[in-house]
Length: 163
Length: 163
Image (cartoon, rainbow over all chains, first blue to last red):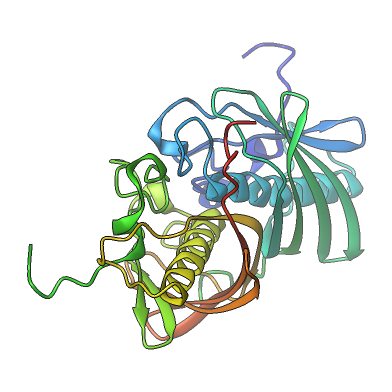
């Protein structure tokens, strides 16, 4: 492993929570979104390949559900990395980060998002309650703003998935 | 083809707009969501298989981006099928339906959505402008409400994807 590896918050998720198709490092088929710090903002970078897996109604553009997935996972990852820092830790520290789930997701689609171009999701996190984060997200294709989103993420209940 | 086939609006999309990973009938890898009438509401039925393609962070539940995709495609399909009916046509009539794109998408996640269970997205469509539809969506796993959504869909501009 390179000395200068930039750790993402998903690198530190416990194994039993690392299966998300969007951002789970253990999901062999998934996108493997990785969320890192960029100054005081959060960043997830991804390049959708030119294939049908991401196609919109018209070939050459990604489908809306993919953009929603990117914003969703970037939102929960941003909430986790921000709460982790508030607790005194950074990705790669070996400490288990707090996990968040999405309470609500909003996406405004501004223009068609091309395939084969590097996408950047940039987030600003605001703690609106000790267990609730608001993440404002902008998605750029190269330098063109294609979508804006807002994620309300809440600390994962201990009972999650066991009801 | 069976005499009693229930046509979905996506069956009538023109070929060049039928590639969406969510609802495009020509995308060989996609979900193939199909939106039909159920009385005066719209219905899309889908059973996420028990595989990593749909996994949430915890195995056994679908990921939020999949739910967002279902609501997104159900929203644009519902807008299309409703406008088509207003124009005097039903799916399977042979007339090309109007195509809509998503302007905005909102999802409230109410509880974890299980894999391996039939999901139903049920929509109510309201025309809020001749070129803009609001679709309220509820997603049920069997009979349990798991998510609610709202899609604002606008008539696809002629320049879409050509800017």
